Length: 235
Image 1 (cartoon, rainbow, N blue to C red):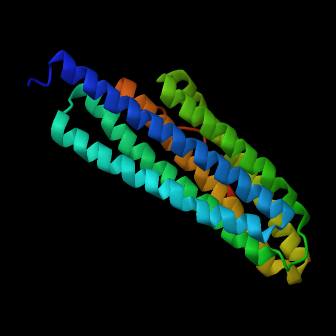
Image 2: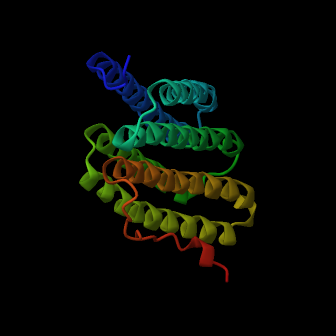
């Protein structure tokens, strides 16, 4: 049977749709994980943090399933042009979301180390940072579903907002640590948590860039604005 046979084309479209549905499910789970990790930190809830860590397995399994589906599609359908870009982008996005899930789990793991420490006022800024990351992830997945390059580019540029918010939080935590030496351990954990969310933002831009790749191929993108200035702190 020819790969251009109408039945074969319909079957391929069905398999692509299933890939897209699986990616949407991964994106939803990742958003839930980020929100749950931030909530566990705010409430200092060890049980909730443990639930986030355990739930990361579901995202990992979906990434494995998608990888297997992509390999099968490549072997059996031999897609070309935009169809090939669709399949390759699905593989890339699945890997990106899996990493986002890992970052959320890492935030939850560090919550355990903070439960016995004195509160750091700057930690109140972390839920807002997480909320922005969730908003951007939802928009990035929306751009993927709709193949909306304009929305994808908007998400990509808005990562600068996340960078700026992260930098403000980072500086506030450092200032608290400098004034309160007893908070050094807790502050270090909080800095890692905030950095995890900043890295989530970078991965979200990769989703947006894959939407561009699907629709525009290798057409070059303009350099994006970056406002994470923490690497310059202290020298």
